[in-house]
Amino acid sequence: MSRLTRADVEHVATLARLALTDEEIEHFTAQLEVILEHAAQIATLDTHDVPPTAHPLPLVNVLRADEVRPSLPRDEVLAMAPAAEDGRFRVPRILDAP
Amino acid sequence: MSATALQVAAAVREGSRSAREVVDEHLATIEAREDELHACNLVTADAARAAADSIDAAVRRGDDPGPLAGVPIALKDNLCTRGVPTTCSSRILEGWEPPYTATVVERVLAAGAIPVAKTNLDEFAMGSSTENSAFGPTRNPHDPSRVPGGSSGGSAAAVAAGYAPLALGSDTGGSIRQPAALCGVVGVKPTYGIVSRYGLIAFASSLDQIGPFATTVSDAALLLDVVAGHDRMDSTSIDAPHEPLLPVVDRGVEGLRIALVDELVEGDGFQPEVLDAVDRAARALEKAGATVDRVSVPSARYGLSAYYVIAPAEASSNLARYDGVRYGLRVAGEDVAAMNARTRDAGFGPEVKRRIMLGTYALSAGYYDAFYGQAQRVRTLIIRDFARAYEQYDALLSPTSPTVAFELGARAADPLAMYLSDVCTIPTNLAGHAAMSVPYGTGEGGLPVGVQVLAPALGEAVMFRVARVLEESA
Image (cartoon, rainbow over all chains, first blue to last red; front, side, top):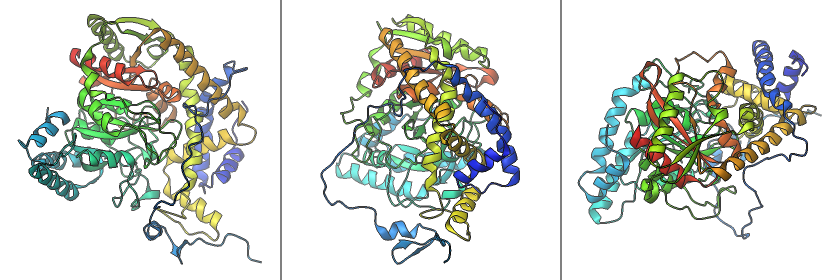
């Protein structure tokens, strides 16, 4: 496995939406490298023709009748949000200003 | 030893003890030891007293107060309880009150149990010592300089210290069994799908399972019987009736075929007293009429490596929801992306960030097949190897944890050393099987040792019979 670089860690932090500090990036670069080396042991197993298991149960779609049933009370849910307005979650600007 | 759940429920049901008296007694124990142990994020004393009074009123009216009538129970603080703060021991959920209640909590309430506390955990159940809590560590009741294990360390410590005869925890890679072993109590990871996960805050959804802590094997069966069973709110819940375990726990092990798992008793890091306990357990089972052999589950030695790809991958996806929009913490930012990233950096602790980073890396372009894809194929190999072992044996045996409880701080700086605490428990989660830890004597420093009984999917009846014989012989 190639060495994990600081740039790799910065890239992953962006993907994970984590605004890490310089110190955290340095820390994680060293720690993740050790953990990934251990994880890479699985690469030594021959898994040719072995199907992946995503889940321990043979999952099938669970269907139910399309009936209206009570859902969570909207006021209570919005009361727990950091910001709400007009029955909706309020967030900062999403798109760049024109 | 204070009364068991079965004793408490029987006394309350027949009116020889009031639920209020039982609850007050346990609240007094919490009061006496909580400053030292910090097993709880919240003690719900007033609600517990009110619930006890209504159980007593039901008994006086002649109503059936349920199989857990008046039994205090501690709930891991990742189980949603409507209107009661549920934190996952994380700053990112501090102050959040869920608008709904987990199915398991609804079921214990309906059975007459009385929640007395929300217990401490490693943040988002990620850890093996409860040191990763944003609210400070829990200490082991047997030796407060040691950890209680984790991630359900608060629940294990609560039962060990007599806060409640019962507790619920969650187990993704050993988070019920390892703290049970380190605190000297019984802890069960049921078969994946027999207990509803609705209202359990998700860590790694294909591995997470809720299960009981108790001081006795029969009490653990009693609680599992109450919480198990199909739930339409969890699409991974097995749609079949739960066969009650309590009536079968005393059937003994005559004629059962049991084996020690080579890969889970060999390697560095196993304390001699721990291995000795497993040998004594094996002899006790032989004496009780079982045959005890050795079996190899070759791919089990890769369980830890596969787990530390799969669990963080699922966690990185599950924890994407903590984005400062719908609940919990928000740190301002000039746009949504900056708000998300700052909120997550401020709200998550180091271990949670480490796992999100690991998981995101393992799922990212260029690494997906080498890490996540390969780990999923190794998971298949582990399932196949266990299936072969269970063709020959009814149950398997191993230590629960390679060591007794370690000192606070001993593994905090070395994530990999901490992850190795779960080497014996992880394969069960990957396979979706059942396993439980039973206290079996003491090891280094006079601290409790746990022996793990493993069983195939839906093999709980045999597993509990084996555990019950071990309990008698311990």
